[in-house]
Amino acid sequence: MKIKAFYHALGRFRFAQFILFTVFLLFFFGPLVNTLMIAFADKYMYAEHPYFLPSALSLDWWKFVLSQKNLVSSIALSFLLATVTTGASLLICLPAAYAFARYDFPGKHFFQFSFLFANAFPRMGLYVSIAIIFYKLNLMGTFVGVLCIHLLNTLMYMTWIPAAAFRNVHINQEEAARDVGATAFQTFRHITLPLAMPGITVACIFTFLQSLEEAQGTFLIGVPNFKTIPVVMYSVIYDYPATAGAVFAVILVLPTLLLLGIFRRFIGADAMTSGFKMK
Image (cartoon, rainbow, N blue to C red):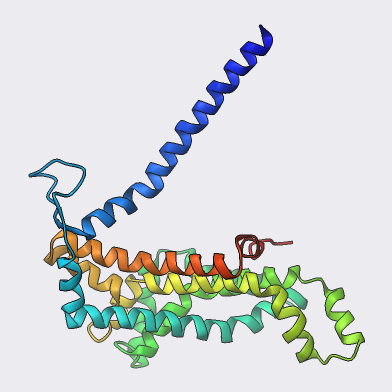
């Protein structure tokens, strides 16, 4: 009887797990599936036709979005900005990340914590203060000004995560390379950098996606000369049917899925998650 009761309780526990997992899937993937349906729908007016599935599928709204010069240019600008932001952030932040991981200096913890400040306050208030400075420096409505905003939002990712990755590389491995005659640069290139690459890769993914989705600062600093996908989406939501807005949402989601798929294929999930380990 006790064994039977145990299996009965175990069955109820597994059923509860299944229910919770199903709720999680609906909560997590439900909006994405709904967006995909709307993006490929000919018409999707739930108020008039209360059906879960669209009445007809079509690529007309994809053709419409991709035929608009200003919309296509915003897509190109978003990917250009995300790429340049990721590259510039690597050049600026990797030396700082290595210094935080390997050296002790006065104010180290304060400076490392300061990279969190940009994310610790309401963004719009921070952007307004920056806009006043940029106006005096003639950076309003310039590519450099928008790039600075994007860099500001990614400094924490590109500093904290690589710093943790560099810290996870045991110093004895570097010393062993130096003992056999490797220079400091050779040690960094052939030992430290490859071992820290999973963490740097994770930081690059976050930086690219954060830049791709940045809207408020770009709108305040870049408009009217620079309009990225998230900025244009505001007008699309108001001026066009929901199907056009869903197309833009899918365009923003696709890079995320593509990047994760590529890195999972060539780097591996275990290597990527190791980039989050901190000592």
